[in-house]
Length: 201
Image (cartoon, rainbow, N blue to C red; front, side, top):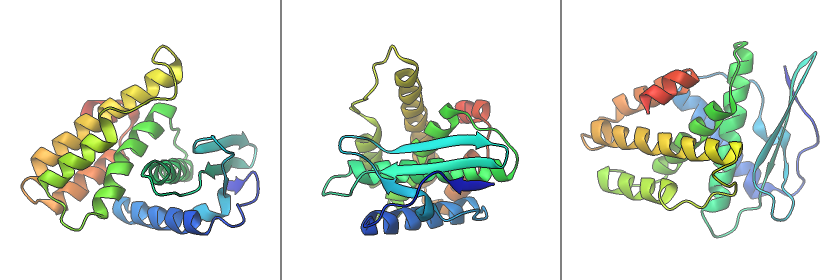
């Protein structure tokens, strides 16, 4: 169903380790079966290039290749790797179910998954730390694409939807320490269609 377009990146030790942990966490949360290991599809992004998932549809199925940046001391490359793995997991799951996925769906899910993965890394996750994380992820964001472009509009809409959705999760579940229900709400969101995701946000 899914195979690589090009070989994995030699030397991406920390990046591959992070990507593998993110994949395992997302699959566990969303209760989905693994189709392929993301590390077999990873390669290093060129200097100045952001995370990119290449997709090609063939008679044999989908061909995927994921380019990610090197990790440094900032949050941005971590977020890019989470986004890339989110795209990979989402597409692999939809392909295994013979379901289509739009670019907006991918971006909305990735924006939510950044919150999910980073929240799980916070030792004392509560309403305050959730709000701080959301502000860091979704407020004052600098977009690469101009807002008048198709890509720019899509990224801004995905960001706004994720901001609203995670704020609702914070009010309804995090603030009340209802973490089991929080996981259920996240799981439901993952399996929604694009229109349902937009309504949920």
